[in-house]
Image 1 (cartoon, rainbow, N blue to C red):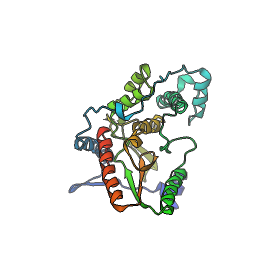
Image 2 (cartoon, rainbow, N blue to C red):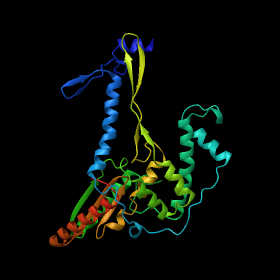
Image 3 (cartoon, one colour):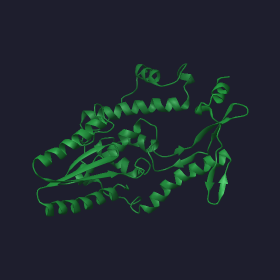
Image 4 (cartoon, rainbow, N blue to C red):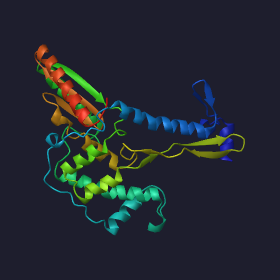
Amino acid sequence: MWQLINTEIGNPRYKSCNIKVRNGSGIILNPQRVLEMFNSYFVETVEDLKTRNKSYNVKHSLSHSIEYNQNNSFVLPATDCEAECIINSLKGPLAGYDEIPESSFSKLLDRLMYNRLSSFLEKYNIVTKEQLGFRNGKLNEIASQTFIECIQEALDEQLHVVGIFLDLTKAYDVLNHHVLLDKLESYGARGTLNLWFKSYLPHCTQFIEITKLDHNSFTRNRYLSTPRELPYCVPQGSIMLPVLYILYINDLPRHVQEAKMVLYADDTNILIVDKDEVELKLKIASLEKQRYRFLTMNSLLI
């Protein structure tokens, strides 16, 4: 009834629309074919990026670029109380452990491991101070304010200022699993824990879903594309994604010399200052080489 009323009064949420996509010289009207085409596009875009990035499958030595942490992370067993608290925090009604949907069970495991890894990183102060994204008490406003203050200080000292802003292409979709596992090893996630991540990272799948309202019957039809494997990403939508990503680029400040840096997730702001314009240009040229080397070693693209 409410669908009928909203349709008649022109509520755009319930307007019927024809799904059509132009593909070359033809037009695709079938919703299922449209979904398959979009899903293929998103997956193959990452494949194309990987093909263009000739360094993707090249093994680079990362030991010299990461400050090795001597401490090992131990995964403590989960208690019934901890699991129950996490389950109660998940969205949607859950009748009990035996009736937890697979997606919710996955979120439970993600949260349990996230709590342990985050606690370890915090205890040993592993995440670089330049990283302000995905961290408790660190907001986007703080990152912006920090960068602005750096600019103001340089201008007050009558220095020339140049800002370089990097936004990585498909940052979360092209992470090299071999590189990530090596970095986890260096930061302290070794042994069984590293093997856990080795089994966790592969075999991610992606699909696209749409719901289309049938204007004649006022029923909603649900369409799902065929799942496609994503062998290069960190699971999207997982609480583990932010912490794994910031660890992946955690050593970036160690590669950048004579510059100030503010990181917020995959956005990188670099500030170069000098009183002499010639020296400033030399610093910029040097920074470009450092940036290129880091991106190449880590299979990343701008």
